Length: 266
Image 1: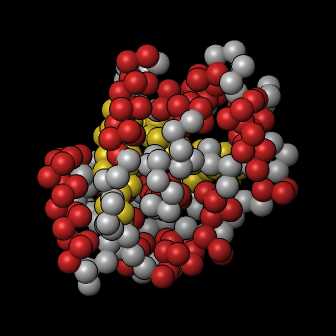
Image 2: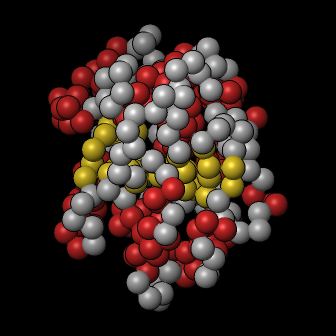
């Protein structure tokens, strides 16, 4: 743990944050894994819930999906308590509720299920008092798994890549958040926008960043996450960037982002 990390601010109410963007490849899982690891490094007990059937957040935190006794599929569609699904990680204070490929069928299997939109909320409610942060890595779609995440969360964090068409599809995401807010979860807000995959060599990146800040205002974090090779390599080693390459630009960026998200000094 980094120097000074042992002093944790007064414990807030558990913050349940859905990390969502209906486009794929925009840094949702990278942000869930590395923001989670950096919050844990600050001393916050953090749970990453992997709701993406691809299971990249799970493997990125060193979990072997083939060796699981229980996964989020069993929690959502079986009688498995969430606490029986949670695994530790190599980072102190960081835990993961892993996904398995079975989740790919969950969208269809949930359709006739009783209280289908509230399965995840009920599961998280049973454990959230044990954590300071619960980060839900959503799949790149706006189906029933993402609706479950929105019904369970109090906040939505949206990673936006600093590339052409960055804002494409965000209108639908905003509408879906509003729909869930009106019908299932009146506490839900889009609280945080994170600019990721920033390439300082291109004018386009600056233009996109300016456009996003103009559109979303104070919800956009000051810290921007750069596009780096090390951030891309870390998941294949089953590690977050702060253990894979602690001094890299990506590690520094996510540490600063964690401080900003948690309201601590940057």
